[in-house]
Image 1 (tube, rainbow, N blue to C red):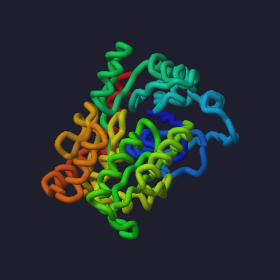
Image 2 (cartoon, rainbow, N blue to C red):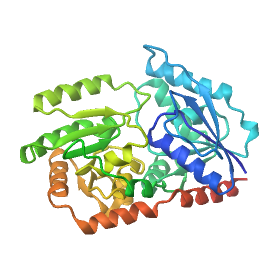
Image 3 (cartoon, helix red, strand yellow):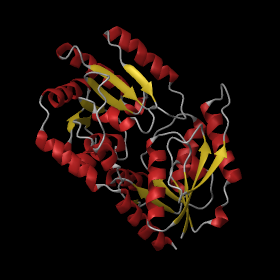
Length: 348
């Protein structure tokens, strides 16, 4: 079976990480897999040589508006892609789903956009594909309620062994970690407020935020976040994207992992933290209740997030820790790949 997986970037973001890990797992099972992606800088990690890569040149344009960048992204991938070479074309995001005329689509999560080009891209990428996958039942239910579609649910895999074996980073002292950057969907302002409350009890605790690769322009939100940090008298450390080989150690060294996202499809970064044996606190969302159950702590707002994080740091639960490790280990990319192949066979 000749499979094309399409994504929008060579930089690490949840859907991009998913695409390359799934491609490698499919190749391990004997599928002929090609990943098509836009070349936004160097590829974030080495890829199994059995996976073919087609990286479409996509130079940055200084000052380009988000809407224009989205349209240019779609046009560049559409112009380069060769759909007739594949039995299955599987788009992993709204850009790649708009760049092809006939595809399967994984809807990782649903968004609400105000930029017209983004709103149109998001809608077309749901209604045009002929088959759909979601990584959680909660998101699949949203798709059914909103569009009358019935996606197949195939949970994410996790590189659990890589995070379980990580040597904890010690150079940062005691720190609270969040991965995903500073943006509205990641609940960054609520995290900042919760951290300020934690500092009253744990004055030596640092807040480290990693990741943040995105197509979108969050400069205004980032400015508001920075201004609020000054008002609160806290100084978070924003690392930006962390090299692939360094991320597990950074995760493993955290006193706790905060995941206050307001919208998610699965929560891969939080699952990686569980694999590393780190206490995790997430926002109380149906999708995260579905995925994580009793393996994590929950909060609804800054105060309850701070309470759950304080308990996780001061009184880590060994039973919850082992439950979290087992949960992460149960989500394998091999299982996800087998489910995808079964799904693809049903479409032929």
